[in-house]
Amino acid sequence: MDITIYNIENAPEDAKPLLSAAEDNYGFIPNLLGEFAEAPSVLEGYLKLNEIIGKSSFTQQEQQAAILAVSIENECHYCSAVHSTILKNQLNMDEKIVNAIRDQKTLPDNKLNALVEYTQKAVEKRGHVTDVDIQKFLDAGYTEENVLEVTLIITLKTISNYTNHIADTPLDEAFQAENIEFAPA
Image (tube, rainbow, N blue to C red):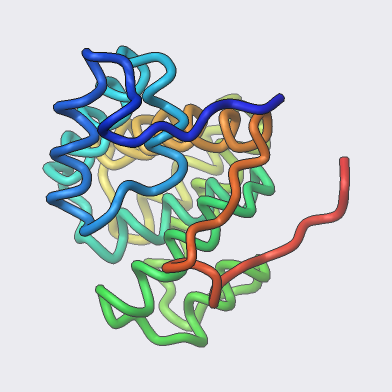
């Protein structure tokens, strides 16, 4: 499906201030947000959820690692590239760790590995994780609050990952270096 990628000039009225704020924040309007403008409530909801996740008890690196794990598990080329870029270029996460998340390999950091594994299991099992899955996550040093925060992260990425699957969102130039290809469904 072709979803219009809106800009500030041609977006629905309710989306214009949201796109303007995104442009101020990112320096450009990412294609995904331009697509979300088709439904201003979706754009607003996505941006608000993203803001709330920023207030979670996870560090920024943990937030982005979990977000990347969801995007990889959901085979979303767009979000995988975006969050790999953020981890490497903005949060200075070791490239080997980012690549391990992308390749679904064991991470050298046990706590971060537990976060990524738990997040992947929660996506794979559509939330039907076992008590053993949860306990392994808790034993790594995370909390029950973090269990619920992972669910919030999955919610955010489900909106964007599914939109990207529907629209086949073209990757912005800023994220091209981290492009990832998944096998066709």
